[in-house]
Image 1 (tube, rainbow, N blue to C red):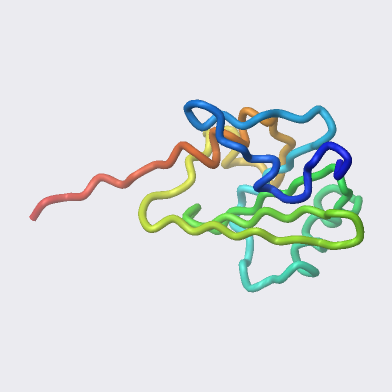
Image 2: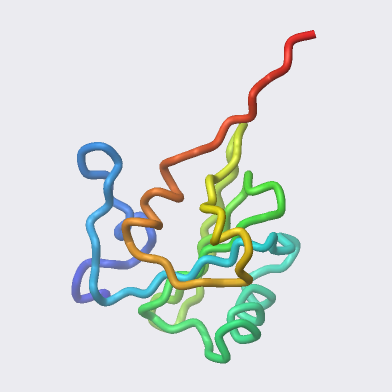
Length: 129
């Protein structure tokens, strides 16, 4: 993947136009929507990947973990012999999941779905008193 100029999620997630990201047929994307314990570091998240997929994090895979409130997101991937963890936290709102995604422990998602997940947020309505 590094021969393609892909060294980090920033290289993968380049905004084009209205937030669409360029796609790559060489990567697989896995979403873990069930509320991950974010006290786990890289080793703990690698353990979650093994527990769910029965395989280690490969250079061509990107694993996206959400916390229970869906306001924080961790992106785990491997570049050569180095594991990397990228974190995102929303100031308000939550990352928007589809109904069928909320019921799954993990699932493979498309590049377009990753794009939607990172760009479309859900904001709670405030109730006036």
